[in-house]
Amino acid sequence: MAVRALPQAQQRLRLSQVRIHGAVKMAEVAVTVRLMPESADVDLARLEVEIKSRVKVHSVSREPIAFGLEALRVVAVVPDAAGGTEPLEKELSTLAGVGNVQVIDVRRLL
Image (cartoon, rainbow, N blue to C red; front, side, top):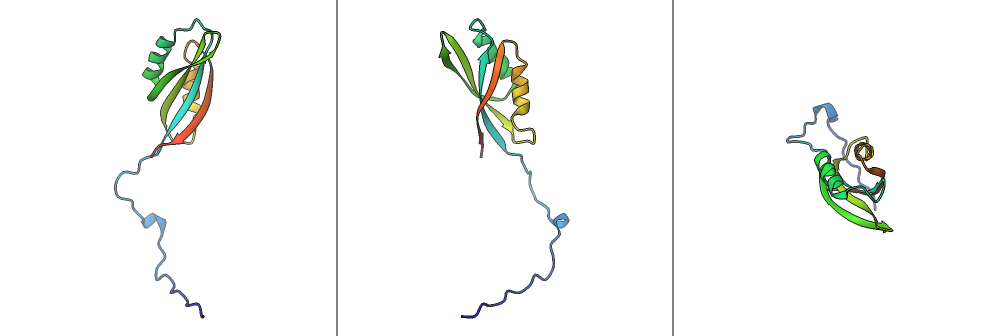
């Protein structure tokens, strides 16, 4: 069985000539973050309100840690940019009462 030769392209297509019609939108990711408070005395309700005012939040839940200490589990939606989750981590770590910020999960949204 002989392999048939494929015809060569007549003209090369340059990327500068390609145009995409419509808006090209950057993808978004859902980042799950665990926020550990500085102490058990931190008002988590106030902290939730402050987080929602600074970050695009999908959900916030409380996670029991030990001895009455609770952490906040925040699912935030951020653009899939070159900085990754670092801008979100920096923003959340500047909040009063936050002791530690830990990224648990990152998922791309469709």
